[in-house]
Amino acid sequence: MLIGISSCVTGIIIGIITSRFFQVVIVKLSGFDIKVSNGLSIEAILYAILIFISIFIIII
Image 1 (cartoon, rainbow, N blue to C red):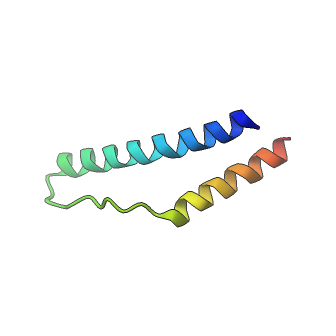
Image 2: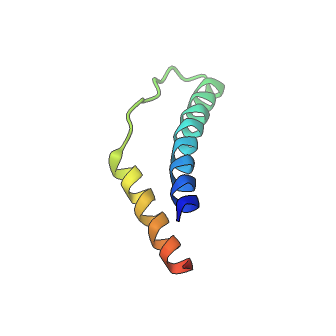
């Protein structure tokens, strides 16, 4: 259970960081002058946690 919780938290943190990084890279490569949003959607994080928990329960 502890491994599942830590992997969920680590996955969400790494996902947020890499998502921002790739957004910035694509905007810079495309040459557009677009500001990348820095908003963090709590709803998306809750959906990710809910999906992870449901998959974890099915596997158990």
